[in-house]
Image (cartoon, rainbow, N blue to C red):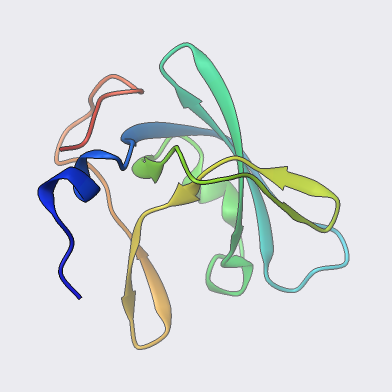
Length: 108
């Protein structure tokens, strides 16, 4: 299904830097991320714990985030965005800028 250029422009994609990431107690899949996105902190939940046995390796990583998706609740935590990642055979592959850039940078 093709989308229009206007549809794509409605997506707010920004670079966030992971400041905190932890497994959610009682969940086999859920990680709770806190990102620095410009001057704001943003909590995003992601079902990828099984792929990162030591999620602390993700602290400091920069990655693209979809910012203007409606919030959703997971295990009592509110998620305010979505991590943009590739899917390779059912495994997430996180995307990163080729060099360090300011958090909050717009992805076009």
